[in-house]
Image (cartoon, rainbow, N blue to C red; front, side):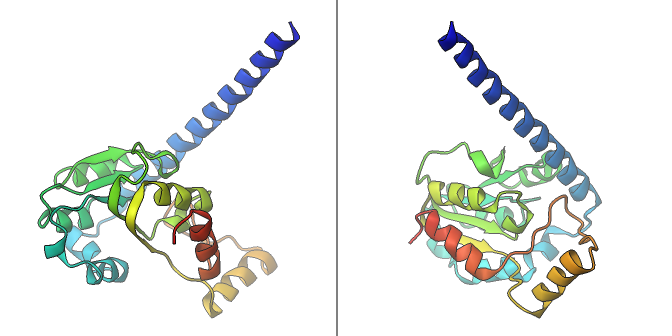
Length: 206
């Protein structure tokens, strides 16, 4: 009887945790649906953003023909549209927002999924892209670990580096003045470069 009761307790605990995670996932998903409904930036303008231009500058489109590419948190698909013009095996986009994916699927295959549990096998992609994403995660370390898991060769991560005077100002505002940080997105974190390097190493990325 003790074993059965213990097993039931473990099952209930796991079920409760899964329900909590599911509710949080739906909440964040709806938040990003609202964000993308309000966002008026065209795909052409999104592609001109400095982080997207930085990624493009490191990838020769004419050498991508037979490579498998994942764009995690692809949004409405600016990078998907760009790379799909050069690759026979269309790049795959992942996002948490159904609204964003409705647009992105016009250009390439897409999957609605959390970054914490990507529905792909280990080392599935030659190139994994995560542009301006990890600062909007509740658990950046776990998100990076999952990106590393599905990445075979090259992982491109861009993020705002707050290891500067701007970062000090945000810390002052948050902890001294007790003023909340205002953001368009449901989650906003202030990250510094050494944090990201540490998480990448823990994700077994060389």
